[in-house]
Length: 294
Image 1 (tube, rainbow, N blue to C red):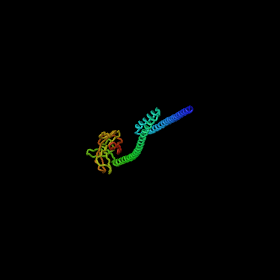
Image 2: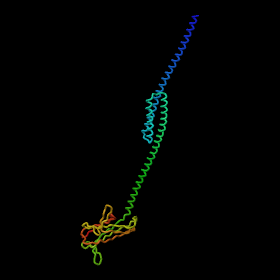
Image 3: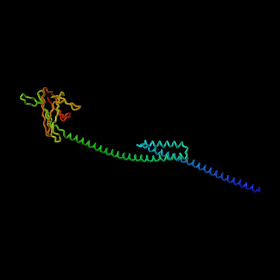
Image 4: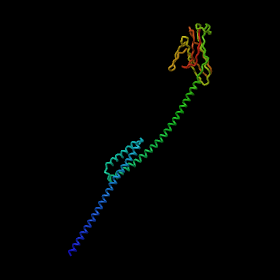
């Protein structure tokens, strides 16, 4: 009877020990599983941190390249790049737990989305600027060609104007000078003797020119004796920075037909030697001749 009781107690103890053993095994298995899960989570979060950091570095590099192009969006691109740099600093300091990584990933995706939009806009601006530059270059080329053409036209017009002005100049020919002695009767007798001369007669012909504009024309006649004295009225006229002392001024009404001009210049005590006669159209010498008194 007692042996049977002892066997029952032994069985009970064995059963209890078995239950405890099973419980211990279950606990050990759970602890092992939890440790593996924790290790896996730590490994995963560490990998995630490195991955997000790499993505942020690539995002920053994309902004750096866009900013280097120096477009009108540079300020906005710089501001967004600063956000990426600040997030990289925060991520570097973080412990890399799962909750933090979820937050950083969300911020990264938001920044990446913003970056794609800005880069697309920046690329479009570059394309637009390229089109505008091409159009501007084309316009500059066209304007340059037009300017060259205008310069050619201006040059041709100037040459044409000069040709017309030259063609419209009146030609002075047959410039003649003679000395005369004036008799009491009023008759003039030609002489070559200086001491006998009382008057010098100057004559010249203004030739016909169909291109010239009709109207009044004035000519300044200058007579210089052998002592380099200007005879006659000895008046002086200025033409810009030039001045002319002349013997007389003659004005005619030109009508595109030949005109003969004759003018007497009285004097006394004429010098012996060579005299020079010059005809000026303002400051331009248009005819000249000389004669000698003995």
